[in-house]
Length: 104
Image 1: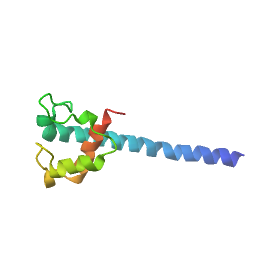
Image 2: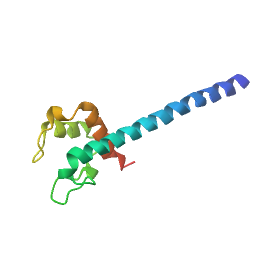
Image 3: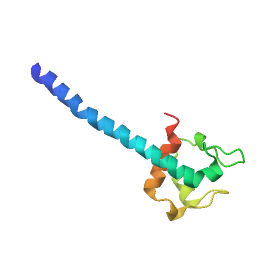
């Protein structure tokens, strides 16, 4: 019985730092996404992901449509110009994390 308890305790002790590191990494990704958003996206989409002038309200972007999000950035959509290679894949990941961050 001691071995089972020790084994469970060891598993929890090892998992806690991983979960904390993962949360820290996600928070850093969201912060990076916020900076990228403010620099590149806020002029059209507004400072809080909604623009009263008509750009898409990113707060309502469907969470299950990441590919559509990426395609819109890379290729452009309607009035939005294509960003192509100007925004790198890791920056798009950070933007996606930022857009989804206020829903959690």
